[in-house]
Image (cartoon, rainbow, N blue to C red; front, side, top):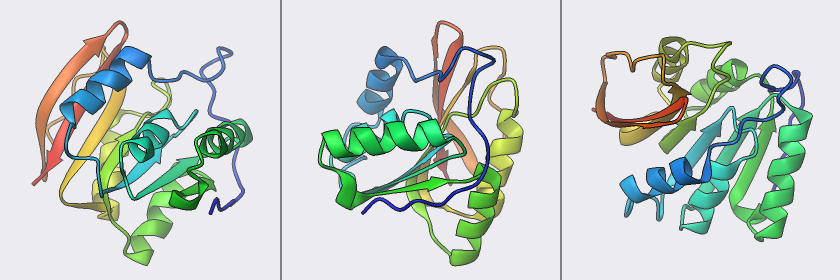
Length: 179
C-alpha cells in the first residue's frame, strides 16, 4: 500500500534537480550493512528518488517508509515501487520532514534503520540528527545512515556512536549505531 499525505514544497539542489545518492556510495552502504537489512523496518528521510528505501526493500526489509516534501520525489518513489512490485511494503509521506518526525514521535513508531540525506545547504547534520534523536524513532540498537557534505564533520551526539565514515567525491556517508 502506498499512502499519500500532502504538504510542502520541493527538495531541490539549487537548480540542479535531485541529488541522488551515487551508485557506488549506495553499494558501499549496503556492503557495510550486509546482514542488517533483512526483516528490518527502514525510514528514508529527505527521500528524493527513494533509492535507499527501494534497495532496502529489495534486500529483504519488511517495511520502508519514505518522507520528502516534493511532489516529484513522491512520483519518483511511487514509480520505483511499482516497477519492482514493492508497493505493499512501502508507505510514502509527502510532508515536511520535521513535521513528519514530530508526528511519528507522537505515534510511538520506531525504525531499525534510518537513512537521512538532507539538502546540504539547508540543514546541518547536528540539527537533523538532534530532531531524529528527540523524536525517539530510532530503535534501540538501530542504525542511522547520514549522507552529508564532506565539509561537515560528523558531530558527537549522546546516544550515537560513529561506526564508519566514507568519502565519495563531495559527499560523505556516516554510519552511526544507536546505543
